[in-house]
Amino acid sequence: MTVTIVETRTQARAITGGVDTHADVHVAAALDPVGGLLGVQEFPADPAGYARLVEWLGGFGTVCLVGIEGTGSYGAGLARHIAAAGIRVVEVDRSGRQDRRRRGKSDPLDAVSAARAAQSGRAAGAPKGRDGQVEAIRALMAAGRTARSERIQTSGQARSLIVTGPDDLRARFAGHSADDLVAELASLRPRPGSMIRYHTLLSLRELGRRAEFPGRPAAAPRCADRPAGDRPRPRPARPVRRRPRHRRQAPDRRRGPPRAAPLRSRLGAPMRRRAHPGLLGESHPPPAQPRR
Image (cartoon, rainbow, N blue to C red; front, side, top):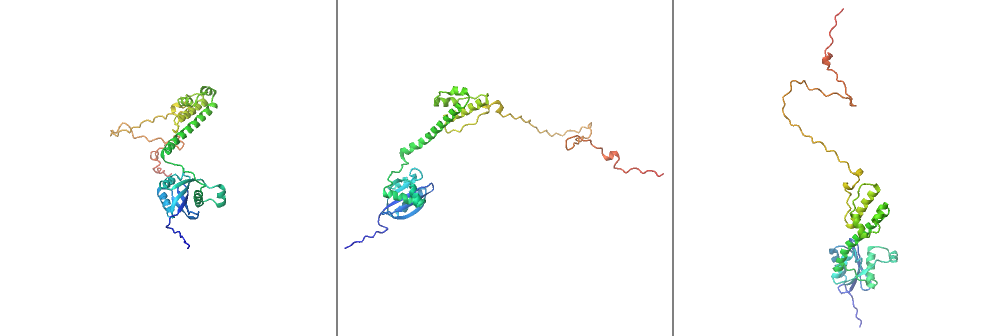
């Protein structure tokens, strides 16, 4: 007697998933136990999208393994969510250059490739854990590492400026350790003098302050530190105009009518005012002449 076993969708079967992670959207692929492709779907890169992705994979059967690309960057949140659901997660490297040339490069193909790498055992690395004390220490070390690199770079710029600067500056700062050099440069007080020496000291002081307190923007030089020729000239104070008080004053009868302002041409030269025509008799007709 032959017994035929028919597998239905409701029966549990081991499902392997693969995810190609991005900043905004994750692309997931599901494979059956024999490597057949069951589906490819996109999900947003947020907690709601993570839940929908796990639910979508569980719709095909029991999810036993998920391969994720970039568990230390874009896929960190998804890896934590899937691991918290009790599903095994493995780190998958990006597909090889030859595979991309043969099959092409697209997000669905990368997701299927990640699922096949996890199912075949080619990718079996543990994901990077972005939680716990290690992650807290890494977050603290990131700021210190950036400040240290900035301090090293600033100190190198200061030493290069000293080497190419005046000879007295080279002799003054020669043989200083990094800490002593930064402390002495930050305490400089440049005085007006030679143009090259003054501006070199000014730049060295700013570099020393930047190396002493990494991350703080360098302040612009104050007017007191600038040479006399570079200081802005003070503006003259404008006289305060007070409005005259309006008082009723009795007209001075000893004075005549107010004199008109003198006439001036367009170029500003004074012009002679012409007498009124009535005073010259031009407004009256000439008298009649007797007949001879």
